[in-house]
Image 1: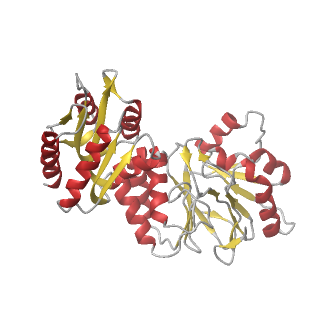
Image 2: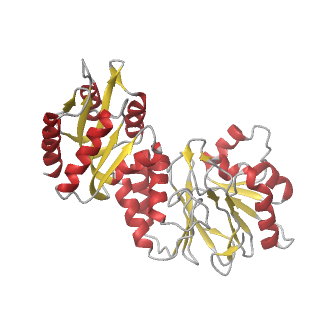
Length: 387
C-alpha cells in the first residue's frame, strides 16, 4: 500500500490483518500497522522497516517507489523487531546502503543480529547537526526511554514532518475506520505508559518545532488538528486524569462481588456521575482495563478474599497498574469474604504504595451475598466518590 505523505515522502508500510496479539499479549481485533517511509531526494532515505512476516509486501512497496534505484540511507529510530527484523536482508539487497542511527542503537544491533557485519556501513548521529539529503534536512532528536533507551525521532524541517517512532502510535491497521483516541490510549498506557517523564521531555523538545505532519511507526499519518493529539499525549504522560468518572474493576467467584460492583454503578449514575465504567477483570481485555483506570479520575476495586488473599486476576490487574506507574487518582474498595474478609486490607496496602493515591479508608465489606445493610454502605461509598 503506497501513499503520498507529501510529494516527495512516501508511506511504504504494511497492514497486518492476521495478527491476533501484539507483543504476544495485547489483543488487536483490527490488526496492526507497521509503518515505514521513503524520502525521495538527491539521497534516498528509508525511514524504518516492518515486521519480518510482512517483509514480502514491504519489499514490493519499496520496489514500486524506488523504480530500480538504490536507496542511500536507512534511518533506524527504534530497534524492536517489528521495525528492525529485516535488517540483514536489506543490507544484502542494497549493498551501498548505510545505516543511520545513534550510538546506543548501533551498539545494540548485535543483540538481535550477532552475525551481521556493519563495518563501513553505519553513520552515527547525535542530533547536534542536521543530516542533509538534498532538499530535505533531517534533524535527529534523541528520545531515550520512549520507550526503549535507544529511541530517537526525526524532524524533517523542509516539509515539517515528525517521524515519531512509537510515539503517537495506535493499535489497528491503517484501513480500520475507528476513533484514534481509544486505541491510541490503550496502546500508550500499556506500552509507553511507564515512561511519562521521558515522554514529557520529548514533548518539551517538540514545542520548538513547527510540526505539520506526524508519522508514527504504528497507526495513521496525522495531518489535521495536531494540537488535539499532542494535548492528549501531554495529559497521558503527566498521569493526570483525562475525564471525570469512576472505573469499577471487579473480580468475582460466584457473582456476589460482581453484584455489589454493579449496584455501586447504579448508585453513582443515580447521583449524576458523568461516566461510570464497570469491568469484570476475568472477562474484559486487561489492556483495556488498564486504559480505563488511567482515563478516569476515580476507581473502585472490588474483590472477594481468595485463599486468604486476592483473586489472581485482581492481583494481576494491580500489578499492571503498579508497573505502569499508576498515580494521582482517588480509589475506593469493596471486599467480600464469608468468614475472614482480607481482600480490602490487601488492596488498600497495594494501592497506598503507589504515588499520590487518595485512599477512601472505609472499605465496604460484603459477607457472601449482598444485603440491604451492604447497599447502605455502598451508598456511603458512592457519596464519597461524588465529593
